[in-house]
Image 1 (cartoon, one colour):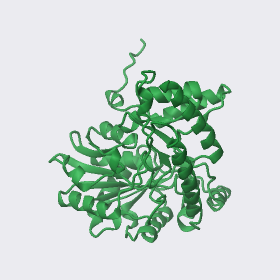
Image 2 (image 1 turned 90 degrees about the horizontal axis):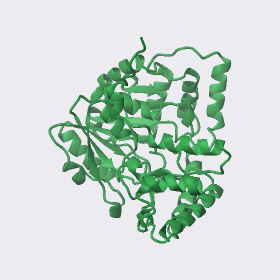
Image 3 (image 1 turned 90 degrees about the vertical axis):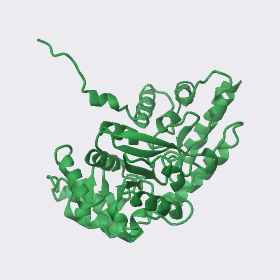
Length: 396
């Protein structure tokens, strides 16, 4: 007797990652021979630094290819704690650190370990695509906080406070922000921490882009006095060291939370790839000179993209203060009725002009698209020329 196909109900609470779908659609067209300009993927076009690659090569040569402890090697966990201390002045120890299969995995494990059905998680809009889905999967309730485009999508304590209730378990702050590039000033981040800690609410700081600030020095709210009790850090080596495919992330949190996350990880992925961990140790301990080099190039590309977008009549764009994304408002393209929303916009742009972008609906807004400028000036110029022509066409 043939089994009846019934997908578990919990899978219906999540959606396919929009950024991954855009990447897949662009790849499909490329395989068909189409010349696609890809602004979709949030992936550095820089190679992983040679010293990091060599450390992994050496690990392979030494047959470091076996299982490691589920939460990562002692060596890497010590290196992560030491790097975070050197960069931000924190004081984490190995029991407060977990190595994960990418930063996304750290956030997923954290939600599963912390959120009970009915718990509320406060998420500023626009948000990174995965937040709401992992909250939903854990049985939590996403409480969305709209930020003001005119004020640069800035997240403030006063704005968040209006959405806190007795059921609030966690507040998520992603700074610099994916997708908007907004940065929460350190003084405001302290106010947010004071607000959440006073109420016994956990504060998750997603530090994926923490080293890519165009003004000022990188900081972590985890360095604030007494922050370790309620601040949870999700980190990643993917962007900082151009190691996206290596899949190494980490979490820093109170030891009982790390223990709970590790318990889950021991039954899911188990350890991150052994030789990738050796490369990560070198990333943490080795030269950090690749970071300012990448940042300088991202600044050059950002300035080019912003200037070019502002030449398109009706398109508005705020200057990103961090990360490597532009988040223009393209609602001017809806006026003729040829385009309904940003999802439709992105679909037509890819089909007709062969430029891949991520629609704003993926991030909780309907009037924007996300453009990744983690690609060459040549590609940016080609893609923005096509974008300009497309918008002019749908407005006519």
